[in-house]
Length: 374
Ligand code: UD1
Ligand code: UDP
Image 1 (cartoon, rainbow, N blue to C red):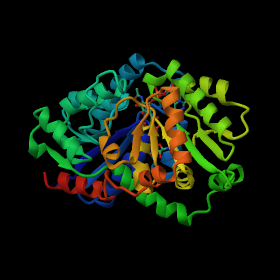
Image 2 (image 1 turned 120 degrees about the vertical axis):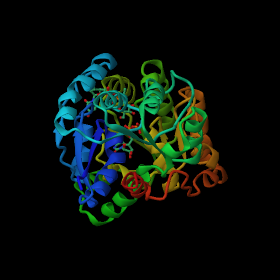
Image 3 (image 1 turned 135 degrees about the vertical axis):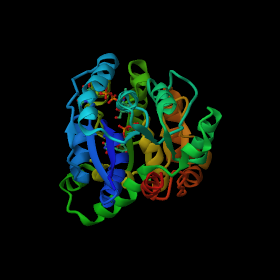
Image 4 (image 1 turned 90 degrees about the horizontal axis):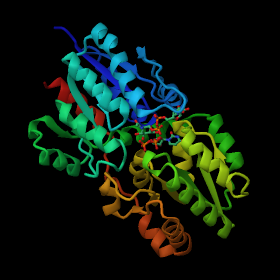
């Protein structure tokens, strides 16, 4: 019997982290599947950090990233440069993840090629097409195109049912981010990691660590200025706190962050961390302040309270579980909520209970079993 041909396509750091366990799971089943990996390299260094850690060597690398790239040319380049890959490999199934430009463009190209499109992390919605921008539209378009929808939670399945997607084409799997988190937490325990040793040298373990990440396009400009002003305020008014901020490589993030936050003693601006070091740093943190989607999913599993610098979230489960509070990019609100958590133990304890709304680490197994059964 001919093997089913799978092509797993991704391009940015979070897609790579969340697709790596799926690549591994398909590779375990290589008597049934021929699985290849194509990276658009929408990200470069931040993607390569993940590929290296999970030991994934792409079969196709489009190497597309340009400094300060724009959505128009990025989208067009992904679609046109995937054409020869799809014509060469002729996949039966194409797997895309989440909501990036790579996701949407690869779905369109894959649809043109005639392959079945499988959407991992399907059904997340804010129903506000400008927030997150352009991710909400990326995932809605991908949802229209996809043949099979791997929804992380019941709520995300319900969103798809409300859009008249057939029940049989949706599988609730849990989020593959938890598969990645559980496997890497084990690996982190057993590796001699230089990056973690270097982090230990800059962390002041007598202080409460606040871990910060941020990159959302809708926060660029005034949003980031407000965020940085808030962080400065928190650092200057709490000498018992140390803020560690691995700064995203996007120039629209680098500039305000470095302009406003450089030179403050208890703020450390560092380069993006490889995934195991970042997981380790999350475990050492008292509080996380972020606008990241993935970090919102990982933190509840580690029992870390999160202030999310967004007005709405497509990940309501952790808000309902009480681990996440939305603070937007309003300086006062960020500072007030951080002060509450730094000063009020009862509030802190109620937010730092362990929750696992996003999965049990078996999402990829479920996806592979589903595809096998087709
Ligand atoms: C992208 C995704 C976003 C996702 C985020 C994860 C889109 C439109 N945006 O946003 O959904 O949440 O990735 O981090 O798909 N850069 C580097 N090296 C890297 C990565 C980025 O130098 O390894 C710089 C480059 O100048 C690049 C810029 O950052 O042009 C922006 O990258 P891009 O992928 O367009 O946007 P992100 O803000 O990273
Ligand atoms: N992450 C990482 N190194 C860092 C910051 C984040 O490996 O310095 C990981 C984090 O654990 C999560 C993912 O990157 O799994 C989130 O990526 P990002 O915030 O860039 O994108 P989003 O999830 O918002 O799409």
